[in-house]
Image 1 (cartoon, one colour):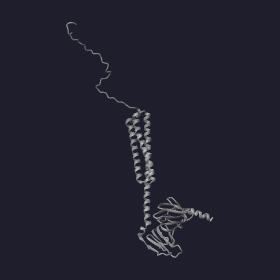
Image 2 (image 1 turned 120 degrees about the vertical axis):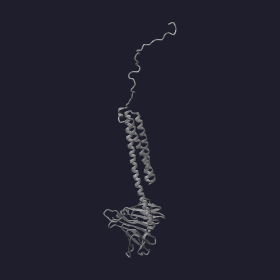
Image 3 (image 1 turned 180 degrees about the vertical axis):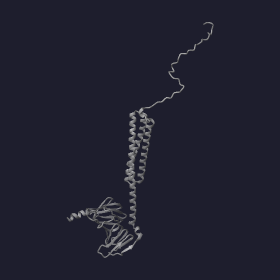
Image 4 (image 1 turned 90 degrees about the vertical axis):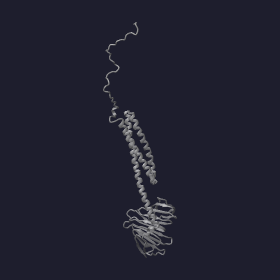
Length: 355
């Protein structure tokens, strides 16, 4: 029973690698392997970063851990999101730098970062820890409050607020709370975290815009298809009426609409690829091309309506009427039927004396 419980605890999901750059490895179940983005992390796993490497861990509770270069961090306790139980999380910083933003904790929940000679307990805060292999450590608070105590007993306990720090000596002692002020913002991990947050917000904005562009592109395609359907009905009507002049006119517009649709469908496929690659510039270009295709299709539909209006008119089903105007002084009747003349004809005298 105890072994089974231990296995279940070891297999419980703590979080995932959300970002990594450089050499990031995880030791899990006695095996060590690379930890790319998406790697699931469990209680007992240990992450190691190489020189110039960094990693971001998104915990299932919404808290975030960011690990600096040349660091080693273990997930020593991860009792998270268990039905009917409180959330308890502990990370062990063996050496290096660790930044944390802790989601608000409910009563009875706990979130701690352990170092060789101290434990930092937090509640809904942002802070950064540094530790070396000799047991020296330091904690600086960006927001909220951190409760610091020694890890070997209860010889000291300090509470540090925003802009304050607490050091830990390799012999287990501490100089207590000190004021650091705005200097905490210059810590490399704090600066990197701000850059990460700005990048993530920019990505969110870009993703939101790209999603809108994709939805608009789909609306544009639907509009082009609708225009094609409407003009096809005009073609069918003209063919049924055997009106070849009108048929040729609307059929020409239908051909242009079909060409616009084919282009737009190709652009839409490219647009989806650009969205998946977060290529904002290409997304905007392709969305504009699809919009132009819709405008052209709309223009062709309007011109097809004019084909019907010019050639068929309101009485297109009655055929073509021909009206002829005649001059008022034009004689009536059959011009080839000429009446006989009533005037007598006198013959001239003969040209010679003999007849």
